[in-house]
Image 1 (cartoon, rainbow, N blue to C red):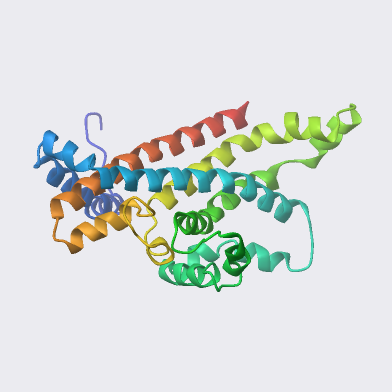
Image 2: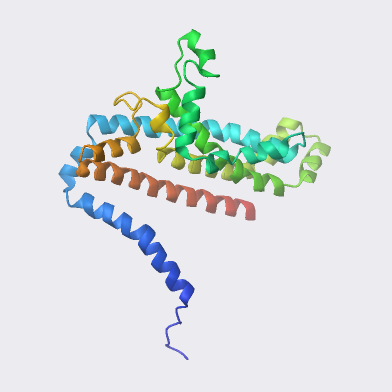
Length: 271
């Protein structure tokens, strides 16, 4: 009948209740706690020198890791899709290792391997390059945990691409570089950017591996999530709330960017 409200089924009730309890309420609690401090106090805490340094280390290092993985993840996805070689399935499964490995274990492994006496760290030590317990160690940890996002975002797109299009371009006289730049690369740009954004957002929120592989010294290699935990240890709940709110705002902006990239990619695919 007209004018009647549509029935809300049980799955919808369960879904909405779950989202409210697990997502909206914690976010609302964080925002409400931040607003009770007042804008002036919020700004003072958020812009303290130690907080600004932590933001710089977190966001700049995460962005650098995301960009590097944009290139390397594309290369890994390309090799896994286009080539067959012994051990391919093992390498393909190893890409998901950062997803399955507890972050604290990952941090312990990275700190061991990249220390001055580790397998890799000892190769750089004679040149005065220290990796573990420095900002470079933070960068390595963020590289490790963000790589799968680019690879897994790009793989389905590469698998759906028809190689006949490339062969047609070659038959028309296009070189391999022209074929890559004009035929292969354009459809790959949206998923590459999406993978970079996902990896960046994951690196921004990383805690478990970074807290072990870095020295966590302010103005050196201290990241924002670790600073939140340090504030909680000092019973500075206002400071922890404000820094957490800043990270929340950045995460929401990243979510909008990721959604925009995904929509852009779908519109590009339709064309």
